[in-house]
Amino acid sequence: MALVIGAVSPLSAEEIPRFTDEGFRVPQPGTVLEFPRAHASHPAYKIEWWYLTGHLFAAEDRRFGFQATFFRVGARPPDPADTDPPAPDEAFGDSETHLTHMSLLDVRGDRFLHRERLNRDGHRASASTKILDVRNGDWRLRMVDPGREQMHLRFSLGSDARIDLALEPVKPRVIFGEDGTSRKGSAPTARSYYITFPRLAVTGTIDLGSETVPVRGEAWMDHEIASEQLSEDLAGWDWTAIHLHDGREVKAYILRRPDGTPDEFSSLIWISRDNELTYIGPGGFRWEADRTWRSPRTGAVYPIEPRITTTDPETGEPVVFQLRALRDDQEMNTRLGGPTYWEGACVVFDAYGREIGNAYLELVGYADDASASLR
Image (cartoon, rainbow, N blue to C red; front, top):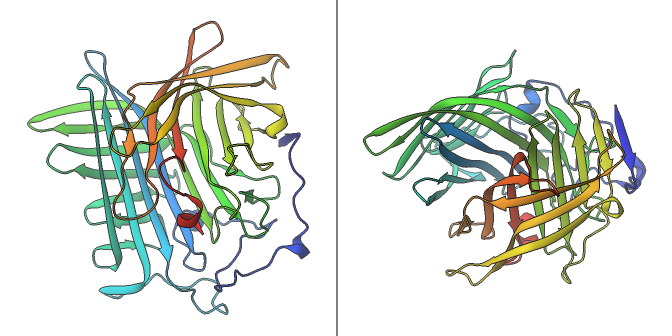
């Protein structure tokens, strides 16, 4: 069940094209996704990503944050008559590229490690169309038990760290979007199928040189399938995924126009303990920057500590989420493709300074233009 508060009415199905000008498919309202197949790759759509962030804890009050994002970008569309095209199997394909970003925050060590990889489809990188199994070199995310939707993630950060994690849903997956698609601007093609595991239990190890650290914690996973992820009239976004200690989650994002004002398709979504969704449009919440940080590498100024004010659907009372970054410098300074952005682990406090949750915050379009990279 979904409750909608102040959200924008979707376009009718007749106004939504089935294909982009390039020939890639456009997500259609009312589509029923079939699982576990929907977790896999969709070559008929141009842009797809599998995105995980999480907070991990170890003995002696040690704390870590991690990000793992696998991007698949189509270079050309498959035959439109083929509704379920197979994944490329060439050793050196040219129909897709695979970009992957990985990071680890070591809070006690005051280190933020990150790496990226870019490969064509083939023996160095691939994404299965049958089941969730994406890889780039030896970095890999796969679903090891489709029935329970359990997953395994493995990646390394040069010689500094190796991460090996098992992930299992604590709550069922949800699909964002009032009509089954998530709008990302006024363009009718700027929409995605948006599948989310809002809370995953995580166990595993982090190898730091000669030290192996057992960890456990929680993660959030998004899987988006699109062909035009952002309208051309938007410059970037501020995005957060919040785990509240009371068992609820919040996804919130501001889609920014070039003048910095929020687009009408910005949204805040509450996920109840029973996985019911409450959508709140941009008129129903405020996103204000309490503190910024300037990158010494790019000169970009990021609003790394926002204060989000909205209404709690359970009580009807105002509520404040104050995000505090666990480290200022969590900038993903990319070189291989896509915009440079800030992706960081945060702790969440209420209006009285009480800790109420953990979050990840993503800030895109402050160092360079995000829109050109996602169309």
